[in-house]
Image (cartoon, rainbow, N blue to C red; front, side):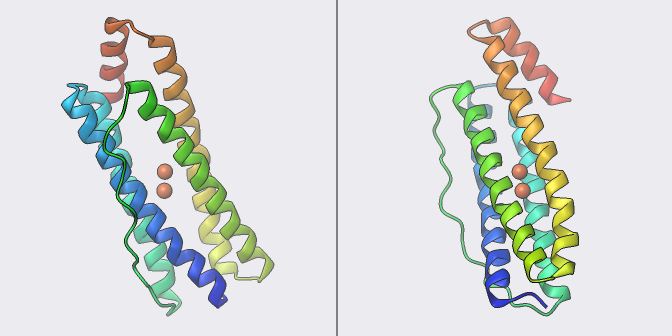
Length: 160
Ligand SMILES: [Fe+2]
Ligand SMILES: [Fe+2]
């Protein structure tokens, strides 16, 4: 069993993951309006992954007969100043999620909620991967600067 406090944290994480799904969708739509379809595709794929993260936690709670509150996330940011600002926001977002995930992992370990700890090992691995990608994308978009040809090349790279 997970304590009430840990169950609440897991419920909050479902909201965070659904919030990330919405945020990445909003970013994807913004890129579509900018005619950067590769970047739009990248964020659409990320949104689907965030949805899966939320469902993984739902399954974990269900398997242990814990209750699911299903609280709505806040509205996403829909407007951005530049391509770089979107990738910047994405990295900051992933770093925040990593902190949330490691907090849950630590709580699980403290109270010997092994089922949660094992499940969240997967999430930590996933977060490392997502942060690496977010950092890499931001570094590359900074290299692109104001060069349209380089921007289109990077957009093509993200469409794959
Ligand atoms: Fe996630
Ligand atoms: Fe993520």
